[in-house]
Length: 112
Length: 118
View 1 (cartoon, rainbow over the protein chains, first blue to last red):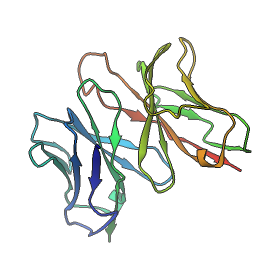
View 2 (cartoon, each protein chain N blue to C red):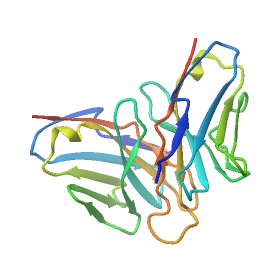
View 3 (spheres, rainbow over the protein chains, first blue to last red):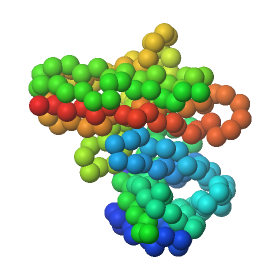
View 4 (cartoon, each protein chain N blue to C red):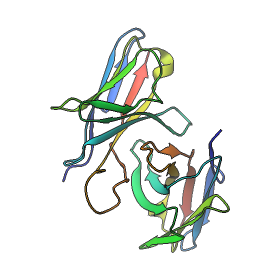
């Protein structure tokens, strides 16, 4: 069955360092992958989308890589700040299939 | 441009009652998705609708749950005869699929409705 795993439930990073979150998947051939941020009591907020034919995408301090051979995406936040503390979700979708399949998320805490 | 709107934000029901959750997509979006997030679990897809059509309901429980997206008005997720296990956060998302340009696959989420069944 399809499975999406995100590294460790919780990750603590010192302010100013780079936070790296991992999303691994099995039994899946996604057409694209998305990363979302979710704060407690709120809905997910879209951050970045990367397609199967793209290796890397950047947006300000965020960078996403997508390796379809390893079946893995890495999500980096550089120069991390306490305001980056949140739960980060990866989500995958097949080509032509509208529904997103989410990982359980990684709770990131940036320590001042 | 207002985001996805959901109401109510919090809903308390007793076992056996009906719950109606409403979702207004972003302006210009005609694709609506409902997801459920159980405590300590990830978001799970329930149903995908376009105006007046259910496109994919593979994530909907077979009984008591229904969804609609009428030509006019918000999308409605309806849960009949609620049970304690229905307590969860229900999120609606919308996307601009079908429009030219941009990341059409991006889904924009509302703030959610937190349903508590007593």
